[in-house]
Each structure stands twice: as C-alpha cells, then as structure tokens.
Length: 316
Image 1 (cartoon, rainbow, N blue to C red):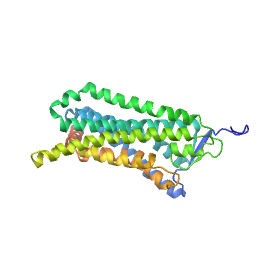
Image 2 (tube, rainbow, N blue to C red; image 1 turned 90 degrees about the horizontal axis):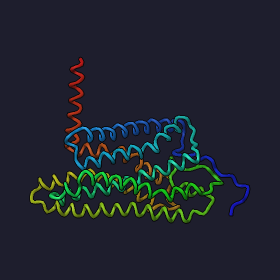
Image 3 (cartoon, rainbow, N blue to C red; image 1 turned 180 degrees about the vertical axis):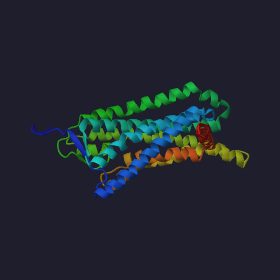
Image 4 (cartoon, rainbow, N blue to C red; image 1 turned 90 degrees about the vertical axis):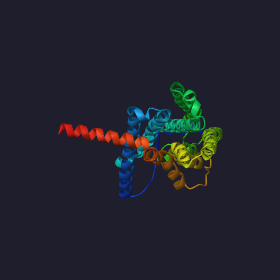
C-alpha cells in the first residue's frame, strides 16, 4: 500500500563514472575509439565470413551471428554513454530505460545460448568428425541460431514486464552507466522480492546451464585431443577451439560475478568494472581473439587487402 500523494518517476539519471570535465572528456574519447574499433572489427568478421569461400563453414556461420549479436549488445549501451558524456545530459526516460534494460539482457542471454551452441559445434567437429556434416548441417545450424534468439526473447520477457510495473517514487538517480537490473530494483519503492528471486533463478539457469554444456563439451574435446597420436594432430584439434574457449572464459567470468555473486555490500566500482568487461570490452576483444588465432581468417583478410590494393593500383 502506497501513499496517495506519491509521484511516479518519469525519467532516471545515469551517474556512470563521475568526475571532472577533463576526466569525462578522456572517458568520452576512450569510449569513442573503443566503440569504433568494436564496430569495425565485428563488421569485418561478418563481411569476411560471408564473402570468403574458405569461411563458408558451420563454425564461421556461428561466429558471424555472434559478431552480429555483439554489435547490438555494445550499441545498446555505448552510444547513450557517448551522448551523455558529450552533452553532460545524463537523463534517460522511464520507457527508454526499460527498453535499454530489455534489449541488453535479450542480447546477452542470446549470446550465452549461442556460445553454448558453438561449444556443441566444436565438440561434434573434434569428437564426431565422421558424423559432423550430418549432425551440424546448414538447416540445423539455422534452427539452433533461431532457437537461441527465441530463448533469449522469452527468457527476459517476464522480468522486464515485472520491472516495468514496479513503482519508482523516490530517487531517480541510478549509480551506473546503463539501466542494469540491480540498481533499478534498488530504486523501487515497491516489493521486489519476487522479481529478485525470478531474476536470480533465470540468470543462474542461463549462465550455469550454458556454462555446464560448454564445460561438458570441452571435457570430451580435451579427452579426444589428448588421445590424438601425434602432437601435430593435437595442436590442430585444439587450435579450432582455443579462440572460443578464450571468449567463454572472459564472458562468463564477469557475468557470474555480476548476476550470481552480486550482493548489496559489493563495491559499486567493481560492479561497474565487471559490467564494462562484459558489455564493452568483450565485444571489442572478440574479433581480435577469433582473427589473430585463426589462420583462415588471417588469410582471408590478407587476400581482401591485397585485392583492394590491386583495385587501387589499377585506378591509378
């Protein structure tokens, strides 16, 4: 029961990383460079995997969709931060805040489902090579990606509806750089116990469930790799999984810290840092992780650069 004279909050103020104008300018320039490099890197992965015949395989199909997801993920958060830092207007409407929160968790959840699918793909490629083309055919790959998107959509729908219907009648200041769930729940003047329980169950299920599938897949992969008769075969088998495993470690580490271990007493700075690692740094690193450790991607990139140089020379 609430007082009749309370006023529903119509906008929030995102504090982000407070500091002097000089510090805000440095942060703006750093974020801008990071965002541009992230967009270019992920777009490059999408274009190369789409256009080069050597990358027309199941693994690169999933990688292309992962890059597309991470383009959306970083774009949900960073452009608003850049505008706020440049204009010094840190406000965001109630509707925009709820939408940002929804799309953030939709893309993040879909991302983790897709990482689990990619681990299954690597398991079949290494452990069941003779049946790989049948078990991971083109139509099956498409269905797995669609299932990841639908699962992400349904997984975050109920918590978002509950969040949108919470009363916010006191402070409207969010001590974060985007509309994350835990600072929003802290601001509500209503009963958030059901939402907190639901959010904990869903986040635990998504993170630990997909991580369990990934871990089981890699246990079988490692057992198969270690049984390979030669060091060359072991190195070749493991090289197909190293990039994906690196991304999994970075992505899951920050998210488990945030959404499973989160407590009221944890440092806000640590929470913001973990959030930045998950939604800003990870999309930045992924194109470099998948390209620098992958000979086919490097060859495709080299050929693309050579082709552009030849075109430029002919024009001259």
